[in-house]
Picture 1 (cartoon, rainbow, N blue to C red):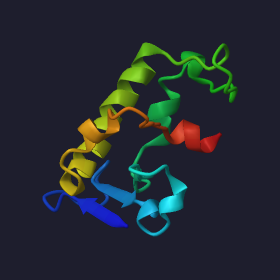
Picture 2 (picture 1 turned 135 degrees about the horizontal axis):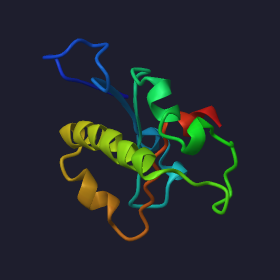
Picture 3 (picture 1 turned 90 degrees about the vertical axis):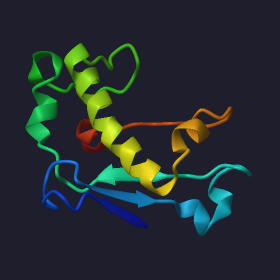
Length: 118
């Protein structure tokens, strides 16, 4: 596990603490040869209401099928903005992580607090 922290800001500042886990270091069988599993997340510093307010009508229907799973542009923009903090933290540990993530066979999944709630 790694903790990436910007020491210029308070530890409780939004997106200031990113926790990174790479379980394939301990069990390479969790991913195909040449790949790793990386789980990065902010440490409960997100305001959940910020996410709910970006939903169409302010309500998450909880459905996961593509035809039902629709998010507003403002929600998608917020997700992209928040994802950047994770990439920046990962780059402090693995400088070429974005290039590696584009490697054929790589899978990148980004979840939000609403994803975790489901």
